[in-house]
Image (cartoon, rainbow, N blue to C red; front, side, top):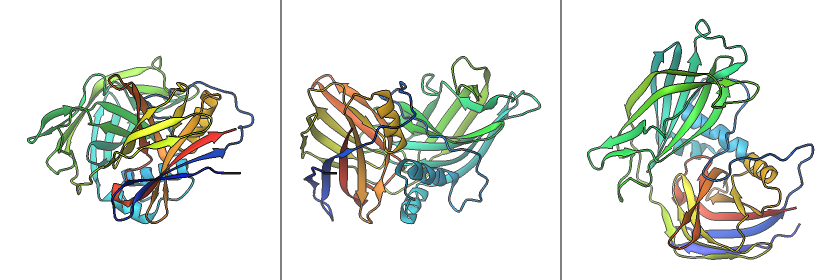
Length: 353
């Protein structure tokens, strides 16, 4: 295997941040049929088998990030990375029961503009026949503007993007970690983890998930009121790393990458290319699913190297078109929040058969 690697200095830091570009071969999966999945503006859910009953040293939110890191990157999350996430997390432990369904907001992790809420949802087996059903899943939170924050410094801001990652499932319950991003409406030089922000979540409808087919809009739904209001945990300010340096990736497909921004939650960049079929996907399992969905499209992944040598996997992301510049603007989420100052390089990988 031969790797063509380009190194690009991006900014002045204690250790200069480097962008690496390389190509690596991948083997075609055996005994797998191609399937279509949503690759733009949607994260692929990673579900861990079975329910977890361990006593956690960290919040459940931190432990869920650690499990996701290991699933996507196939390496254990370093202890100092867990500590970093825990410093931005808090146990909440608020429960609301309605219509025989109990939803508990277990814990929360909060970065500059993103809140990650760990929910436990359980249906009363005396009320619902749960045979053939996994558990319950909230729906319609972003569409109906049912998630917002309030702060005297910037007023009311609604979540502009909502995602979900499965943690575990039982016979009549499930754990999910929801991601709420406050990006487009949040004023400049403000952050939601300043210790003075209250978050509101109103859930008015839940979906009973079918075991055989997964969650679908055709599955039974239950109307109710599961409302939460709580203060987001305070955390130290972590500024994003922004650079005007650029990278030209040449090979089967040519990408011109610019306007790079690395934050606690994601890496964002602009792409200029003549190839409209290329894909950026998350690490590991998500890259494999993307390859299955689009077997002929050039596939790229992005990972980060930390000062301690750890490799940070990515968990998905999406692309929008900048109509003024006609450039593709990509945002790729880290598998877990991280300190941008700890990143020494980014690795852009083009996989080929």
